[in-house]
Amino acid sequence: MNEPILSVARLGKAYRSYKSEWLRMLSWFGVSVGYSTEHWALRDVSLGVAAGEAVGIVGQNGAGKSTLLKLIAGTLSPSEGEVRARGRIAAILELGMGFNPEFSGRQNALHATGLMGIARDEVAHAMPEIESFAEIGEYFDQPLRTYSSGMQMRVAFAVATAFRPEVLIVDEALSVGDAYFQHKSFGRIRQFKEKGTALLFVTHGLADIRALCDRVVLLDRGRMVREGAPDEVVDYYNAMIAEREKTTVAVEQIRLGDGWLRTRSGTGEATLAELTLTDADSNQELKSVRVGERIVLTARIRVHDSIPRLVLGYMLRDRVGNLVWGTNTWHTGQVVENLHAGETVEYTLCFTCNLGPGSYSFSPALVSTDTHLERNYEWTDNALVFEVINTDKQYFVGTNWLDAGFQIRRDGSH
Figure 1 (cartoon, rainbow, N blue to C red):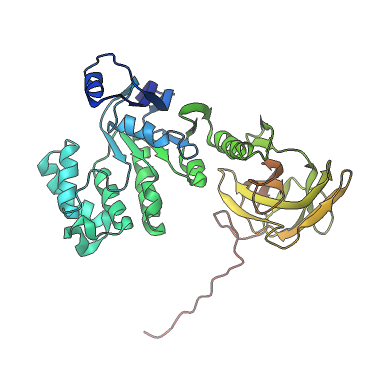
Figure 2 (cartoon, one colour; figure 1 turned 180 degrees about the vertical axis):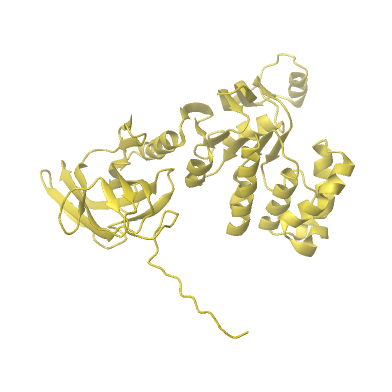
């Protein structure tokens, strides 16, 4: 990795209660005094982020994600450790944080950029772009208290990104926006990243983490428990949640030779014995599939212990982890009930490969209901990987092939 533009070393934040306010005040000046209780929201976190690198931070509620971002942004003071940054940090944290509800959007923009250290003439020059990007019309000159949460987010994002920072921190605030503005915001974030801005990104949208981030950090109970490639950490995080719900007993990860990561977890009452992809006509097993080819996905499940219900679910992902399609037999009304040890269940899924050229994977899940959080017998990410090639269709791009054609009518009159 290049020289970090942002460095966090052994960072920690403790919340302490004192027997009196006088003792609390003395602690502010470095006087060692006793306290009644101590809770560490974050402890011993170290990481570096290079220019142009995007790092995602994932974890359950209370894991310390927002605390870490606030410490880096400087809105909280650390109890231990330090933060070093080369250049300006811009942060979009709690919605409307630092905004005055009685001020208009324009006044809040002036105030916020002033606090960011931006010269007033630069702000005046950028104000039309801030107003244009926010796209809230005449509300830009109305009090913030009249705004919806989505409008507040639009102004906050437009202000925070009006001047490209060296470090951009984005918390869950973007989740309140509409789909159009989210798309627009991610476009600007990607532009900043390409120009060298370091990005710290927190969201519950794991697909966004996979698509945008170069590296992911997993926080749990205030500590950093895993750091690595997005697919590795996101898949581990999903398995960890199931484990915490007592639905799985082990998590196993293997990096395959073609770069795909296989993650397996589960309690093992039912397991995947075989997963194959075959041509629907010849029954020949396939590693590469033609666009438009009719194919069959076959799963053979072995039952090791008696279980009341068995549900098979699939997720189909592209190479970067985007979810292309998914369903399960709970939603299709095909739950198999009252299975006993030694039984085998075979599922076949017939479909036409309407995918675009590229590499894809199927991830099967053997569960008891519509979710793996109740009983996860076995979940295997990227259990079957295959290539899609275009041999006889007209050229197209994207992850989906549409059976579509142009019709053109030309009027000969002048």
